[in-house]
Image (cartoon, one colour):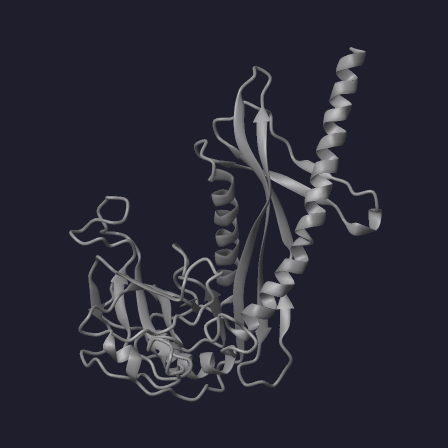
Length: 362
């Protein structure tokens, strides 16, 4: 028996490696030959790369009571979706785009309370204003508010990625199919965003799309090399059913491949330093569009340039350098969680005090 180390620290939510088998079907899309493909240089046509990420945060759990004594759960939350705009050839300085916090009052659809936007005005007018916009979540579960904030963040990420990315032709032979603007989106690409040059990068290997007969190739990849492009259907659980138990026909399809960002130290598991990439696939997917192949060919070289180092980032190399910078900026945009909590308590104390006084006068 040999013991190998998962490189990610134990205080992260999950390890880098889980490898739960994918229950659905995975097909060859690029070639029938399962072998490493060498990286290619970054083409001059690609002039702009944007790294998009988001960050949610719950700021307070709430209990709402309506006029007839009904109780329901709610929560104050915040989220940010932003981007880092960079030149893949290093000819200009990277810059942050659209890093602004949005605040949410997430409440249950079963609540009978009249919910309005809650504005928290600080004593110092120069420190800004916190305004929580009401959003409804289904059911009355304890995690409903947190899930709603997460969903709003993912939707904002998807909208930003779709808006910033170039259109992606589905032609197989167009020499100009490679877009000039490519978006790298943290996590899998979202439902409904086809037709744009959005490349999802999945830092963890929690799902095994390869099986025992193919996964060995990942351990032999050299930095920058990739696997051939594969295709699968989102939510396919085998037997023609998706993860909700419904028929998977009509569910969106994805192209996926793996790249190695760096060689792992000998004491780490052999898949350390490997990342899975993902793009939308058209329904008529007996072919891989020229633009997707061009992006796959440059992905290894590009991601090796953006990969983080372990002495600077505990989730290296998958937590890309622009992503780490963006995470810090998003944290600043949401403000100090401790100070926000104080302002929420102060606001609710004033509101409840005012209600008590008005009730006593009446």
